[in-house]
Length: 215
Image (cartoon, rainbow, N blue to C red):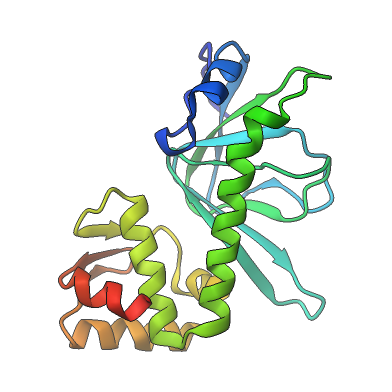
């Protein structure tokens, strides 16, 4: 494993209020760790206490259900931070989707960072609530449309969107079968809403239509 070091962490701009930035400015940062596709970063039940920032690649957060099925609760992309827990234990698995570089940093033992970490907690709560709304109220087309709109926003609003996750991953995130996800993508393509450039890349042709579908 190749790794290099740096002196401090720079959180993504949407997670970087001044108080949090100042508090973490002098926190030592461990070397960049490289994970190949499918490699576990941490497991459910393991001790928490570190934060993880993605340098490149993507990560899925998931839990295995009692019947063996997998439920993905979140995807994290380059520049995003994950691993925040309300207590000292990880409640989900974190796994690299593709070749991924992750920077790890730890807070000083005994330091009270509750106020500075509140923005991370609130952002995670908001994303979880939005995900529940997608799962509970929308049909397959609306779920996939809402997912694509979210990916567009997280990648800077570009017309061309990279999807590092597989169709099966998307299904496990949206509560759909892989066949249903594939059919929805095909329908969106046939209706001229998107163009399928390849399995992991699409072009948004009618973003306003996609937005309306996902609401």
